[in-house]
Image (cartoon, rainbow, N blue to C red; front, side):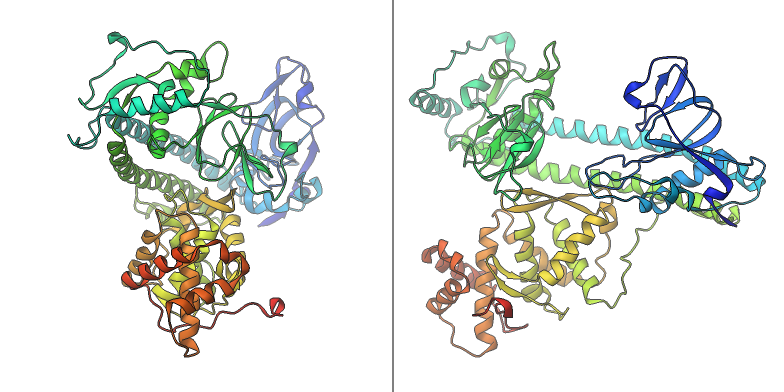
Length: 618
């Protein structure tokens, strides 16, 4: 039967400020995984400990754990103790298991507040819990103990596998920098000549640099191909100090990303550089690497390295990744020292070989990424299986049902919850497929996604899903679908989105595995056409798909209303689409139309005519 928690338990708030704890003999339960100690105790009993505030803050409702404690203990004032009124009716340990494994549904869902998210004690009191007989409660306690032991074993296995994958990635980088990953070609310009040109450009810049010592034979750790050359890192790159800028100075809605030591910390209306950059954490997350493809600002806790015509940009990133600069930040004075970094001996391949190396590294990394996704999917499936087993026990089902389940197999991933005949669901599946196929595309964001979705709808799939595309600045856009879609995938944690330049970029969320294996609505032939669209634009930023999707739309519009198709009229229609389109040259549009014709990306009049929304028409 189900009972109201406040009727079967007392609920008492902690009284000790966590930062005011005075070291002593008693455990003091805190919000984090590790508890503190205190010189006084508040309780001497068995209790379930529930946080009263979000575990992550920042306006998010979350709870990482519900704790259990018995004996004498103190309690922080942002937690409460739930104590059974009668242990002969309900065991505290059973309640802990029930509330911990169902915390999302029972507790997190009751949190309130926008900035400071909290869980009111009166809402905890109203939570309904299933209470079986004492014998069944003890069975569940024993079952949970066995399952947790199995989970710990599995977590260790998964952690070991992920570590091995990271080691494999490092081995790939090491082979690349030893000249073992791709073939060398005698006709390539020797790297010694490339180094001379790099030094000449640095000399012309007028920057005063401390001369770096020549490399001694004992500093060379391995042999390199004959047309490569050893040099020091500081001879080929400039690590530029970022400029001070606090989070408070960042401007909401500004165009240019601001990088700290480990990623974007905000946006600003000015930039330090308009070139592509590799950002290296100097303090804090020392040695952490990030890439930015847009104008950006880097704060003074990091360095930035600008793109150079004399070094392949992606090779520069992989080179720095192989050097493990984070190891430089572990000295007496934590942080990456630029002079130390500059002194690192590095092998320099010819410029043409750098491109081949990058292509092979990305090919190998794509394979290890698939392995990583498989490991994470197995880990999440294991967690879901353990939870399912406990849920069966909570519902007082026969344990024999559980025993019949095959061991060692991943549970089937859930399908989408909406009705199967829903247009929205089918487009959600298509949109999810596009994102999953593009996660390794560093230039993929929401703008590029919207144009790939349009081309998939109108060119690859050609099915009526109730599309409502309108003329928008960046091309055809169906906001009636994309806005709720973005909200759903973020809420379900399939993906997360973070602003980078003019786009929001996607990354896999904690529930990413649930977005996989849901493509049964589409045939292999249809998905291969979608793949073709995606692969066409992988090497481009969002501008090229914007141009092609808009040209496709104006071309298709003319076919729908039976008008003549000529290059000149298509270009005029393109410019009439929106005033902002005039930033693209006529020459570029002509080349795009020629490319579309060559690749047979030609409309046939399918779909609806795309116009401006009624509210925007004059």
